[in-house]
Amino acid sequence: MPQTVEITLPSQTPGVAHKLYKHTFSGGSGQRSAYIQAGLHADEHPGLLVIQNLLVHLQRLEQEGRIDGRIVIRPFANPVGMGQQVFGQLPGRFNLATGENFNRNFPNITTQLETLLTQARPAHNDVCAMKFLLLSALGDSVPAETVAANKHLLLHEALQHDLFIDLHCDTSSILHIYANLNQRERSTRLATSMGVKAVFLEEEAGGLPLDEAYAKAWKVLHGKGFVDAECAGFSATVELRGQADVEDAIAEQDALGLLRFLSTEGLIRLDDDTEAPIEPEHVTVYPLEGVAHLEASGTGIIAWRKALGAAVQHGEIIAEILPLDNPLGTPRIPVLSPLQGILVARHHIRLVRVGQRIGMAAGTEPLPGRITGQLMHAF
Image 1 (spheres, rainbow, N blue to C red):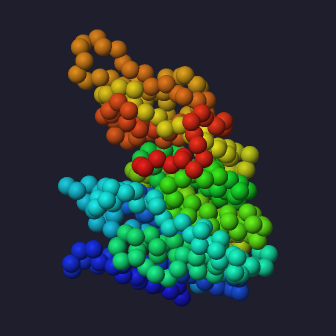
Image 2: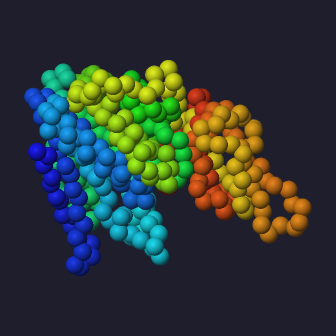
Image 3: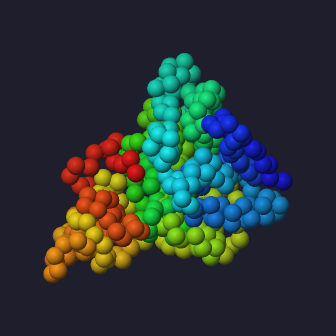
């Protein structure tokens, strides 16, 4: 039977309690484990539905004895953000108390880990010992502030597992994945399992989102030769298209994709008819340094000329902005592609202001000004 655990966060409001839940499925004699969560950005809801579909499958797989190891599912990762409604809208990406992005500034445990490694040297590829060191580096002291406590507990959970997958989405985008540069093979396998054609890899994105806080710690162990890449912990952020893509049929396909990946990792046994929807050669790996955040070149209504996932050429018009308060006959303002590649994301709000982020394009070549460690914006 799956185990459900409820954790109450420190209260930030008299009479209000925020809670985290997790469901654990287990079986067999396997020692490996996976952790999947959704809703860290509380305004991103496709992952919440994917998780619900995934839970149905995992209950069946556990009953049938087809789980070998441990799989932990967190159905929502940000109860504070889920409660932040403003006039009926859910601005769940940023903490309204501080303005901080909920998926930034997670604890960086690398310094503490370096210190511990001077005192204890785990055997080569002894992953269990390494996970113990990671948890020791984080420590057990939970912060008193609600959001900080939430971040600590999420990272504490992730560090216990061999695999960590964080489900997100963009405002309007194609399906894509973010992962670390030293995990290309696994990232491609996750992509083929889910039908993802675009994978973005980076050495260090910056900003310390949760998947990077996890990956940075494992990179210390890998860099010092304690663990091989294929044995190191793997983290990835899966962007499940756009905020409006909350449909049961889509969520079911994404849940099956996650199950296919867990099967390739030996954590579950699936039926023979669960082949990956695409082949590795259909996955394009882009350096995160090759991603361009598109900005509005004027103020007005935007009319897109390129669909999501469409190929774009450098200097090509991909959208036009129609000013609303200029004299009659004022020409449209073009938005030009800064690269050759694909259009990954478009902002779903079409009334734009000059300088505003309106989308994202990606190419296979690094762009000038894109600096490792400074690749993530505050948004």
